[in-house]
Image (cartoon, rainbow, N blue to C red; front, side):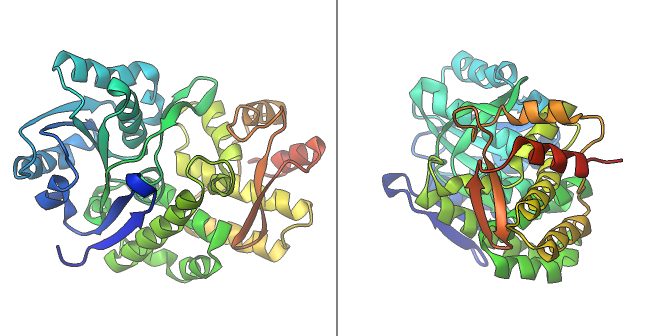
Length: 367
């Protein structure tokens, strides 16, 4: 249990720990202390299963609380984050007669975490689940905070529920098998935390981004821990996104439009968010809120993380704006955006002219 960083998400009776460290998948005691019943269903995908499923099951066999366990292996990809695929989890739970004492274990990236959490929220009106995120994006963002759900053809993450996990077990060793493209996609969410409220962290990222791309373990520990800490503070203050938690969506309204318009899985979530953050920065500058120097710093760091800063040319402006209108932050028919007043200071506003939004989309599109 050495070299484990533990953070706590303080939500009263529903508080839970986030464990961050190396070799955590083999720590059976981490599972034992957070599994209340004797039944476990592990949900993973066909990419992660060959890498980490057997190790996870071996750990569960050594967990004193577990007497019965089973697995569901889903197809890998954002395009499978649907109600139809979600039903495979319910089919397994029901056909194998799991009861309300079951604990679901999400072993995988953000898609697996979101779907497993949503299944846990719905099955028999709510059962326990544990997050074991195996991608950088999931470790720093989607596994923390209790947002669960699936996509709809008309909008990303529009069907879901808030359901907090019993714990999050972030084993940074799993990042060693992550493709370079997905590592970069995770860095988009890491950069986001610096932009919305942690300028010191943003400066650290400017100095150390090359170490993160090289998968330096000590640097990854810092990035994951700092990101989880920053997110946990926001979730504690605003669990259900009625106020400050909306700031975590910097770049997401633009980014979700890209993901939906291109077809889920064509652009990775982090790639779309990275471009969305650049668009938000340029929108902020046009409104006189953000300096051009800070726009340049933002785009430079995102490019250094091997992420795109321009939206795909195939999405025309009218279509882009229509897609942005299918967003959880839309209120009374008005698109609300997370914008920047400085690196480390974000706001939510609908105080902008539609023609200015259109101009930014045109400016930020690939030639």
